[in-house]
Length: 109
Image (cartoon, rainbow, N blue to C red; front, side, top):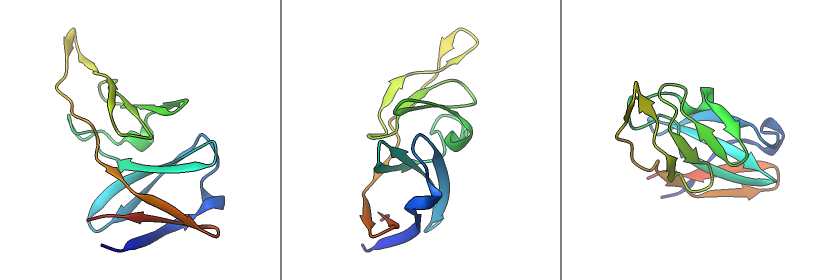
């Protein structure tokens, strides 16, 4: 698979995220201290848009149930809750990112 251009580094300031659509997938791209990362945007529990969640350091909190994901790896850091029960949630898929000049590229299979 080839890398696909999804934006410019100037479009994504540090500690911010943006959503892009590539090959039918919504992907969240983050800039953490000048490094760029990409994970699935939709929480795999109930489809909450992670780009609408709170960003704390290198983590994003799902706006629907509070699950916490690492933006660098996509791994679940903390399962959210529905009332008093922990929700079933899996790691988010991570995508390779590369920067060429000022362009951001991601690889989606």
